[in-house]
Length: 339
Image 1 (tube, rainbow, N blue to C red):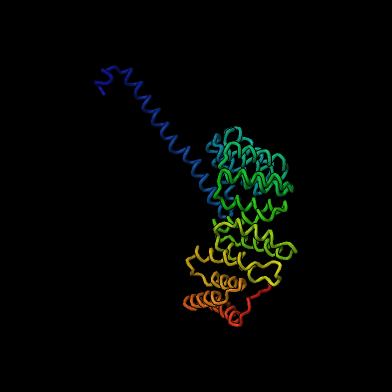
Image 2 (cartoon, helix red, strand yellow):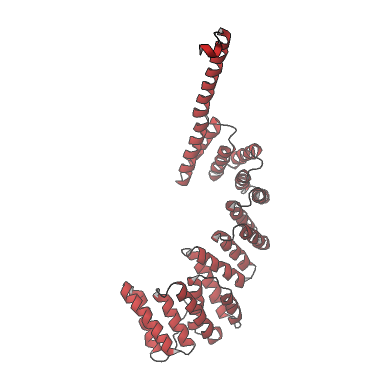
């Protein structure tokens, strides 16, 4: 210290002040800024637990701790909107966009906040959020919902295509586009996108239910086989979709909506994708072979399905296999009325 200052007391004093100032700034950075972060973290945790009142209180503390924190203001706005305090939510969200004008998240927060009072403004802000952050899936989802609410299905379909151009493997994007296409009457393409949902997210039962409804509605039409074949020709590698199509084409009571050859192709592919381990898919293959007139192959597939069902202890699957086998051994194709 003596060497550094060369025994000059004035310089010692200046350096002491600078050291003290640095220490105070370090203290402020450590305690004030993280405080806002901590409050915001708590607010988000409470929000996910459904404790919106407490989440809003924590978000407000985050804003008070750091008024320039646009993220904190945005979350506070969302909390206020959830509580129905639209005016306060909108003001807070506007402030967040002023602090971060190029933030996609901030504009989406504003879109959410104004939606109840001004749907067109919400749509405009959501579009701005997408412009600023093309990868912002939440912005696409929100805008899709707004367009559906205003029955603008053509715009929704176009938005869905743009969304998929950015994130082609997003199941939510395929699902939203499928809904828009179905509303526009393009059920063939809608079914294809539902198939992608089923391939990407096999556990999503809603997509399966929507696809089944489309297929059954087409099967009831006098010329429904043509669009069913179009759907089959472009079906993605979703075992459930392939199975649903094959089962309908093989077992539907009205012959105008059956196609054994196509059913066999679809069922074979579904079984290949699952290594012939799922009894239900093998049952479909058996029914398809029977519809195509190949009863030896049909019986073999049904027996294989029954073996898998019994070895896995699946009594329901075993009963279906036994029922199909009983029909096939009488040289009768299997038929089932849709539920």
